Amino acid sequence: MLALIFNKTILRYVFIVVCLYLSQACLRPPAEQTKAHSIFNKNLTDTAVYQQKTVFEASPYLTENEGQLDTSFVKITYPEFKDSILNGIVTDAMLLEGETNIQHYVNNFIESYGNFIEENDIQYPIAWSKETNVDVQVLTPEIISIRNRTYEFTGGAHGNYFELWSNYSLQDYKKLDLNRFISEDKIKDFTKIAEKIFRNQEGLQDTSNLERDYFFENGKFALAANYGFLKKGIAFFYNTYEIKPYSAGPTQLIVPYEQVEHILTNTGKQYVKHIKDFYQTIN
Image (spheres, rainbow, N blue to C red):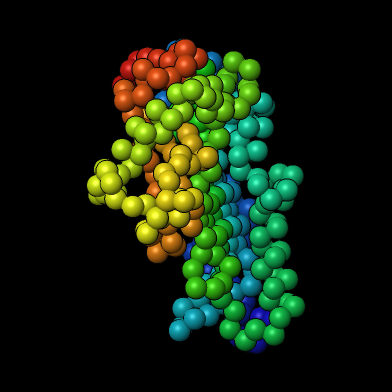
């Protein structure tokens, strides 16, 4: 309980100070900000124009550590489109634990911390935090690639961080599986090219054993199932613990379009052409 840390008079004072410091989150919970997306192209329909929004909320439970005041908080930044279907795609990429909406997402975290404090006899609780940033990596009239970056700390030795990519066709609003870009009979060739890039990035020789320092099954390189599209290539993202220990962090591998374009499917080549042509017009 809060009484374990502060008396009521001091609590009221420090609560106001912390709330003002934290973007006045306690005066306007949840705080919400918007930032217009700056890229404009005449070939991009109005429905694909979006604003980047931020929602922030702080817990009323304050903590103290070595004379410093702190409080748990949750912050989520995401693109909001005029198109409801695109907003549904963003929601699916953002709410991963069964939440029905953003307010549910915010409440879950703040209430979980409150319950943790009230139900446990903790004299000096540690502040929790959760930050989710959903951003658009590629957006053309044909394709959208979205990245969810989330960091969460709920005590323990360290927090947890992950990235999750989502890719959709804007022609039919369906997910873009990798086999739309690389046919089954070419996936081995694609993987060889990706492995060469990976080994060069990691400073490995062509014959270096991957079994010693990496978690690849049977020491054999494999593409990450988590991938997305950039202006210049396909990004494969290995989250922490997937192929390396926590201390080594996550790994991002970018395969340039130029190195694999010759083995892409016709559909894949068309998507790559659309991405290149689109971004050339706005650069």
